Length: 199
Image 1 (cartoon, rainbow, N blue to C red):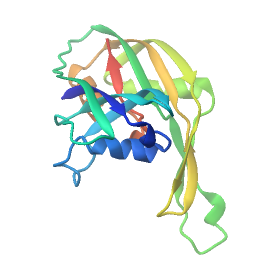
Image 2: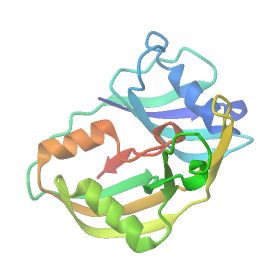
Image 3: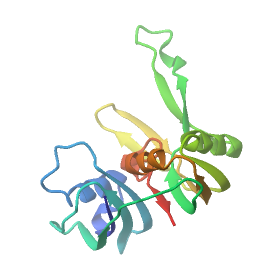
Image 4: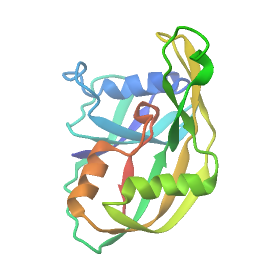
């Protein structure tokens, strides 16, 4: 895997879809593949652009003006049981509920994701995600500003409610933790959620 610091041009930071598309351009030979990177915006300024931390399965390359690689390195994680790490994760803790709006019509009933509002629910969500891989010793929860979006194809709007988790974890199952890091945690990864950082 590769860990990279990337600068995104100012004209690409007003819309999270444009920011995500700019990161895709760092992989010019892989545009038709499913997403093979995770990212987290560390700072966003409409005048200066964004600084982004990106984890990818393939090496990125500077092939465009919208996204510039500041630094990049190969990372080979190696864990052992009972190791402790500080962690940082921006995620979108949600639950699924049945959409009752369509019950009186002929449309099929579907389930939808709704954000978890209560802090104890947000903590339980994270505990469930980590339960087989590690123990959460300390968890800090910071609610961030929501991200609003509109899906043109589905003609519907929505929002993502980011939560920044920080704290300390103890490794239980090294291989499972590696899988979590590679896959990312939770939904809304195209909005910059799911990248787990350890120190």
